[in-house]
Image (cartoon, rainbow, N blue to C red; front, side):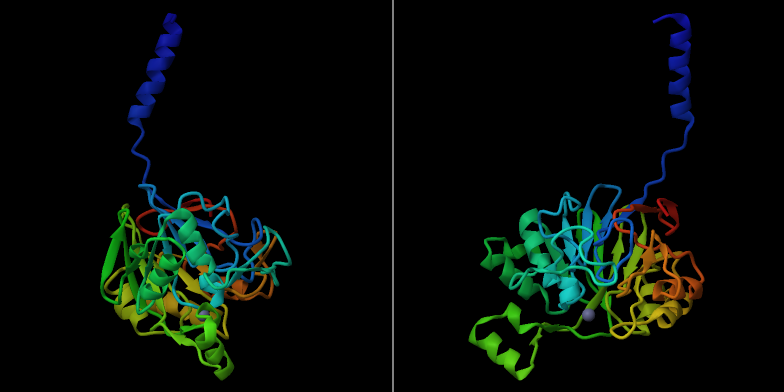
Length: 321
Ligand SMILES: [Zn+2]
């Protein structure tokens, strides 16, 4: 090594020492149905803790089963409730199939569900609240998985998996289990009577990551007092994933009220729009997604499929937004 190379090497080394430690961020990657867009069936998000733990939220119908290469390692699966667009009664036959407003969902996942099939493929834990864990334990057991991988975090309690603390919070919605997951004579009789299975209340989640970021994942919900009393005042959520689709959950105006007045996070990711939310990666004019963006007072980051966003402990997006 000659003298000038040696000096240059020392210079680079000195610069590296002088730089502050890179802030640890939580990476959020939407696994939607259409590359770079936010579409009608999109719910699934992967949260990656700075320590590498990967959490899949509401796989729904846009994750292409357990073999979807976008999943990579999945340590934990969260399912807010049993409706087919969250648990995954079916999924698309591939990426970009159908239209953004009406995506393909031609591959059936009955009677296991997309969530259970992914858990079996990835040997993931499934953390749910209410009375949902025994359902998942039974499905895992029936398919050669480990029933102990289905873990409970009921309202007010929490479990920590891979350094991520997981709590459930109230969601004002419904949670009937489609009798097709039950099958047999009982499932058939229930179906004919129009009665769903009872697996307790639906939930939302609050996650606390190892960098200190706390995130509220609303699930399907209306406006609840707990969004202020519990999610803001107790957990101090700085990032929110808020469902905006209307009809089944809060619409754009109600979701904006929840964000602006009750939860007051630093950033919000809209979810569950039940529409083509974007065209070319931008909010579609006249969409619910656009209405929510206009009504929310904090930065709104649209979950574009495959585009990873990074959030610091304060809930600020530091990359990818
Ligand atoms: Zn629902």
